[in-house]
Image 1 (cartoon, rainbow, N blue to C red):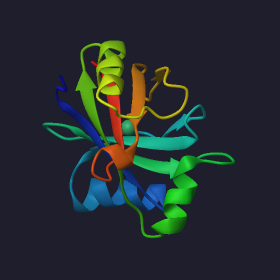
Image 2 (cartoon, protein in one colour):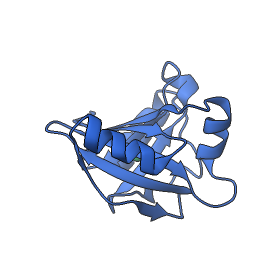
Image 3 (cartoon, helix red, strand yellow):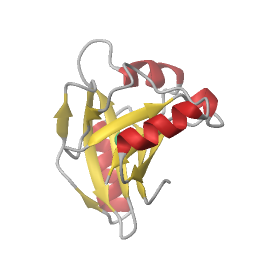
Image 4 (tube, rainbow, N blue to C red):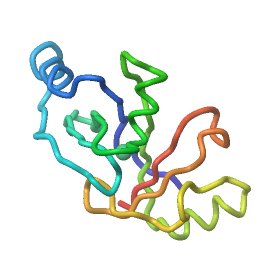
Length: 134
Ligand code: CO
């Protein structure tokens, strides 16, 4: 059911420093910061030949990223995103296998303008999984 790895998301304590590090030290193509108020984050996408890296920084009050950074002050891998062809079919299948979908269970529009859902990390080996309709 799952397709390509769309991105790996890394929560960072300093967005500009992380962007500079990817641009200057790692020589990557780094995008501009985008505010995603519906998700409580500012994101920067880094294009790699086979996938993307999503740098995440808290935006606004009650950002889910702030709690993560409080526990991981130097940052860390926050989630991985897999592509699916049909997000509602994928959700219904996952629920039928006992996986928990976070939030209302209805897809939200993600940073790429496509519907996304998140799956409970306790159901997936401690890894927060984002599904994005391709
Ligand atoms: Co993501």
